[in-house]
Structures are given as C-alpha cells and as structure tokens.
Image (cartoon, rainbow, N blue to C red; front, side, top):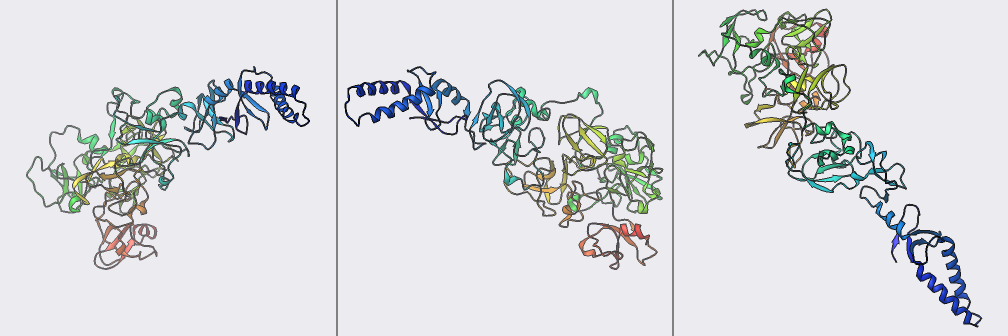
Length: 591
C-alpha cells in the first residue's frame, strides 16, 4: 500500500479501499449464519470491530470510495482531499521538514528566502514557527547561466548555483561582499543567493534572474542600479564623472586647466614661494631644466606644492629658479582666492592660504573633509579653524562613479555610520550618497583613487581600479607591496595580465615599500597622499639640518617619546641618528 504524510497528522496514512472492506464484511457475516462451530465466531467479531471503526469514522464516504487512514488514531482523509493536499506539500532542500501551501490566496507575509515582506502565495512549515517562503522563490532554478542581455544588465561566463545561505567558507572576509549586479550588500544573514563556485561572484535572487514580478521588487531600486539611470544628462551638464583616468588628474585640473589660456608667463612671482618661478612646458618650448619629473617606474616622486598631485613632463608647470624642491601646476597658480558656500562650512567664506602663510607648524593641517594630513595649499576659515585641502575645497555637489554606475551621488553632511562602498570603513563629516540606493562613498575614495596607475611592481602593464573580485581569479588575493591579504570585495588595483593586486592604500608608496603599511593605515587611502616630504628644516635644538620624512623601521624610536617612528611623519637628521615625531615637535615645541 502507498503511504501519505499530511501536516495535519503525525503518522503516515495507509491507502484503504473501502469497497473491499464492505465486501469482506458481507461475506463473513453470511458465513457466520451457516457456521455452528464454537470457535468460529472470533474472526467476524474482529472484522465487525474493524468495520465499526470504519463506519463510525468514515460515515460520509460512499462504499465505493478509497481513502487514506491511520488506524491507530482513527484519522481518515478521502482520496480527493489527499491528492489536493499532496499538490500543496513540497520537500525543499532549504529546510528539513515538509512545507505546505495551506492558503491558496495571496497573503502578506515575510519570506525566509529573500528576507522581505510582500504579498503572494507561501509555503510554510507546520513544525517550525514562522518559516515561510514565497512560492516563486521556492521554485527558482537550482542553477542558471547568465548571458548578455539587451540592456546589458550583467554578464557572467560560469553557471550560477542557488545557495540557501551565504557560504560559510567566504564569511572569513571582514565584510560580506556586495551583489555583483546591483552593488547592494547581503546584510541579512541566511538569505538565498546565487553564487559562482569558480569565482567570488554573488547575486541577489532577483538580480541573477532579472525578474521583475511584483514580489521581486523587494530589492529594487538597488536591483536596477546597472540598467537604469536615475538622472538626465541634460540636467547636469557639468557633472564630474569619476574616477579620474590617472593620478595626474584632480579637481583643480578638471576645473581650471580647461579654461582657455592664450599664453603662459615664462617667469612668475607667486605669493606661495619667496623665489621666482620658471615655466616648464615641454610641449611648447625646448627648455630642458635639470629636473626629474614624477615617474613611479623609476621610483621618483615630484608633487605639486599646491594640490599635491604628481608633476609630469606632459603638463605645463612652474619650477623654482633657485632649484629648491618647489613646483606648481600651471593651473594651481590660477586658483580663485575665495570659495563661498562650501558644503562643509557654508556659513563663512573660505580664503585661499598658501603653506608658507598658514599659522600651523611646518604648514601641516588636517583636512576637515577627507581627514588626511596636508601641507599644500588650503582653503580656510581662520575664525573657525576650518581647513580643507585644494581638492576638497572644490568638492562637487554631485558626481557619478564607476563603483556605483548610472546613479547620481550627492554630497551629504553629517557623520555617516554606514560603511563606504569602496573601502568599507565608516565615518567622515561628508559623504557622497546615492539617493536611490543606500550607498555611500568617501570623498577621498572618490576623488583621490585614479582609474589607472603605473607601478614598479608591474613594469609592463598599467593597473586598473577594481571594485569586485576578478573573474576566473582562483587563488587567494594578496598585496604585492605589503604582502598582506587583500579583500577583493574592497576597491583594489589589479593587473589582469599578470594577476597581481595591490591595496589602494599601498599604491602611492613608490619611495617606501615596507611591509605592514596597509595594516597601519586601515583605510582605503594612503595616509600621506596629501603630504609632500623632503623639505629641510633648520632647528635651534639640533646642530644639523633636519629633513621632513616618513619614518622607516630603521629610524628607531623618537628622541622624546618611547614610540617607534615607523609610518609616522618625522624630522630626522641625515648626518646622525637623531629623529623625532612631527607630533612631538608640535606638542613640545622643541624645534
């Protein structure tokens, strides 16, 4: 006999043909009338008891019907109802118990597969309290292959398989990865996802299937992030599209180099420097001053004293005629003297101040926007002690970024507790926010991380900024510079040809390539990206000149405090072993 399990009863039910039971009853009663034996009445009594149980419990059944029954509990269900119940019961690999669709009409309920409340038909467990999954989620395909779509939503060469929770082996990352389609996170544990077993590729259910039924709208609009723009180009003619193509680009260059300049002054007296400045423009003149421009492939570094971005031979710049270490981009000589209505300090006008005029020791300040130390030009409100570097001084109110494409990102003020979409660290007074999705990007991550860099660790190819794990990358990710593990769900630089990766915080270290650098900063940006080292300081407390530098392990400990100098701003003597923290100089006013 066949057995049936129903949620209304704890025991399996046995299929019984009632017509056969009636026929046996009638034949046995006829035999009893003709039997005169003393011991022959036992079986009819037994059968009569059985029949009584049937007739008492199945009084509504016709004699020719079949039903499922449990003799132990006197529980019966007719065949028609049993078939209907069978249609509504599923055994799903996501759950150890049977699931039943008890209500065929749409209801408002929470789905354990997608984690959201929406209206529809649900399967539920009668043993576990509150376990319900939407019928559409219940019958999603076990595997699927993503192909190019007409709207170019997303593409992946390997099959994706459904997973009923986030893979435990991938939880060792410091953060759950984002969806490879919409960029949204998997903040709710034990949600179903589609994943690739060959790549670190994860996608929401609706993102992987591109389904747009009403119940799938639970992830929208994040689910539509790569397919639909949430702004019109005509409404934002001057929109800044990030990241910038390489390290030489900056907000000042974007704003002021595009202005029409008929001719440049060959000799310039600028208030930022006591010596005359000489124009160097290899594109227009044959002047070949003895100057080595920025070249990371040769481990040479030359930064503009205004915006702290690299000085290259392909751009016009000014060099100190006295051959000191002072250089300026041509456009940085034309910065406006004032900025009004700055997003971080709208109540007062910010005034341009040069590093040699800042009322700060050695011209070093901490930017109020990116929170990074800087010794370049500053826009400041002296009354409030508010300082921002040149890049953050011209921070745009709206941008777009390839880390979250097709959606407008607007500047918002106030301490943000959410993590940055690029570096996964929280905090900061200003952030770029997507008003459609719950996504934030730090200003420094958006403005200071270039799309492409060149690095001496890969002399053949440029390294590109990546926001997600590289497809077909089967080995563990680690940084070529600091040799530490690299989380591929954060932004990082990668060469596809050589399969080499580096932290974004380690990328500018063309002069200092020590280990543990990234772990020291614990941010997506190199801590001294806005600091120009190398200037000489004459001290009254030390007999030799001191150079402003980044501390190395070989520099030992500070002469004042007992702490190491490695990875810190320091002053050190090139003739003896004297070295001191910059912070100790400020705190104790020693030099």
